[in-house]
Image (cartoon, rainbow over the protein chains, first blue to last red):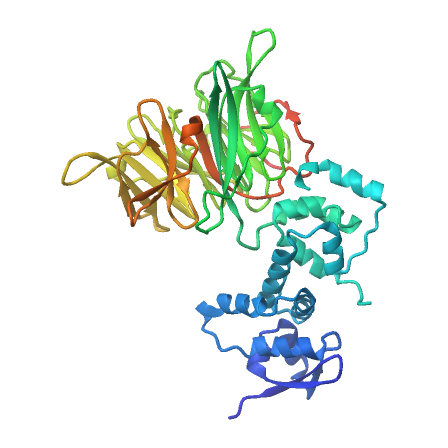
Amino acid sequence: MSKKTLTLMSKDKQLFNIEEHLAVQSVTIRNMVKEDGASSVIPLPRVDSETLALVIEYLNRQQAPEEDEDYVKKFVDERGEIPTLLELAQAALDLDIKKLMDAACMKVADLIKDFTLEEVREALRIENDRTPEEEKAIRDEFQWAF
Amino acid sequence: MLPCLNFDIQVEIMKRLPVKSLIRFRSVCKAWKSLIDSSRFVAGHNVSHDQSEHLMVCYEVEYGEESKIKYVSFVDDDSDSFPQNKFSPPVPPILLSLDEYEIIGSSCGLVCLEGSLQEPDGSSKTHMVVLWNPSIRKSIAVVVPNEVQSRCYPFVNFGVCPKTKDPKLVKFSSGQEVMVFTLSSGKWRCLSSNLLPFKPLLFDIEENLQTVIGRFLYRLTDGGEASRMLSFDLSTDEFREVPLPDSLVQSHLGISKLRESLVLIDHNGRDSTTGIYVCDVWMMMEDGALTKLFTIKDIQWIWGFKKTGEPVVEILEDENSTSLVVYEPCLEHMKDLGIGEKGHLFNGSFNTESLLLLDHDDGRVITSSCEELNHGIHRD
């Protein structure tokens, strides 16, 4: 009996094939398969094709369970650019692939931990919603940390 | 322009940031501050990944007639750089007003110290416990009820419930009464001494004899003739006796932990060939069986273990001074932490980092009295 294959479709309509038993590491996909027996194509309208290619590469890994932790760490380390990691983290969150989400967020945290406030806002696309005076008041509560 | 990053992802990243970054990043935006300050985040932070550990050391430096207590915290970061990576947290003002205080133990980022506060007129002393989070530089004090005159402290043990992140104090008194304080309630509450598996008659006051592993607080006691071990479940307030092997009950024992395992330190071991006193270090397995880790000679006391397993050990330099070293059991090599020459060592303990006390006012003193005694049948 041949292994069953699923087709995933990215936001930009690219198609990716993956064996079902590997795809269901994603809890989201597992639930979809359970619900409707996984019809022909599973659309992932929030994941772009570059990120989906990475997710597929991760799901296709052939690692012994005891090496898995190291593998996922190395996997995100090799993609150390913050924008890529954020896309990967978002996809892993949407698809409910816990280990990948953990590792991607851990890596981002590690990269930004010594950033200035402005660098954090830029890296994570956050708008500063305080006036300089308000910001100073918050800083002054823990002046020693700056 | 890319759209804003999903807040769920921001939260996942925040959960994995170290304490000092979070303290700074409260200023990133309003949403970050309210999340970081929320009691749920404070309690949940740092549970999902490797925590960085610190070894906090308390020592006294003499300047002529004057002496000053200092603290230094070494970061246990798995690397060869230990002990270079260190910082000196400022001593909380409340501690400076206490005399004869010492570290009881630490748990979940908090260091617990106990001492007494002399009333200005010298009439009486107030027994006090200070909970200090050196990573965020906040501390609060808790007044320990009654038995002020007793010289038999430390009777108080300390641990943080890993589920609720609620700091707890357990107080044993000579009248066999047990009292429990939780920071969330701000109150002391009596438990019936009937809950104790045995009557802990005496407590050795010389050394730090408690350690917290998971939800259990372990305490060595001198139960009359021999050493006995008590465990206290921080989530259910239940006491149990942890049986010690016969070979150890007559010994001069210390207690510690290596990663998440209980370690017993027998200071009365004998070298089988020379007959010289040695210190045997045993690890307790899950089934209660003991495995000998190593034997070490000529030491004063084991202060704790690095994550990599090497003990931090106090050794005697000469009659008047001791120093602190990292001992490598395989190589039988000692690496000096460089504090001994600076002053007189007091005590210290290993600890993790946390945000606990972030939602409390720094320097607060909790003076609440005890709730009614209700013989242990307490319903919340």
